[in-house]
Amino acid sequence: MAIKTKIISICSEKGGVGKTTTTINLAGGLAKRGKEVLILDLDQQQNASHALGYVKDGRPTTAELIYNTVAGIPIDYAEAIRTCGNGVDYIPSSPMLTNITGTIANDTENDSNFVLRRLLFNEVFAEYDYILLDCRTILDLLISNALNASDYVIIPVDLGIYAYNGLDKMLDKVASINNTTNRSLRVLGVLLNKLQLTNVKTSLAESIRSEYSELTFKASIPYCPAQTELAVLNQTSSVFDERSSLGTAFMNLTDEVISIVEE
Image 1 (cartoon, rainbow, N blue to C red):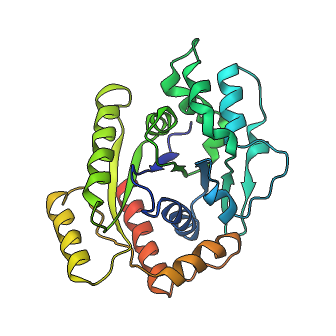
Image 2: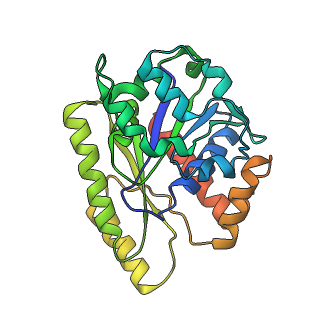
């Protein structure tokens, strides 16, 4: 893995917080800033894959890459990479990831915590400035692999009544990984997502910024359902509307990420 390549997991224990939307729009923003970006879809629901234009084509997915890495079977990593029109490359997911943890756990010849790290060490991936891992919700062995392969983690938080629950569990998971198997892992930022100007949402946002001031991004993402849907659909084209409130927010996030990572 080239020194320049930064691997970032977008991860949360809580569903519906905007992990996939954050992943693909941050990737689009980084591409706009001239960065070479690859997304790995690690969720068997395939939301990121479909949003990026994936159609089943018989080529390897993240599941095959993991299976072959565990089994020690050679695989053409380059063949697994697809390209979007917006300058973002990706490797799609498949339903086979549903039971992937059993396969990873059976890696008796190597440490099962580092299957993804070994996979991403291939020179094919050294060409990228950023690799973004779109993680599933369950904090299982696959997600431990993602965090062990990562330099950073972004934790999206929607400002609902249970926002703190998912955030605390995710921070505990990152701390556990950092204390044991990946000393270099750090929280890149907590991302306030689906921000609405209501008393409850504003109060929650202020509470999170107060309690996690050093970890929370300055940028936040507004609640814009129509714009969010359009932004996701547009990832397969060259369209990335920086003039919309959502586009502006994600470009602000992109610039903040770059300033932290490349400081």
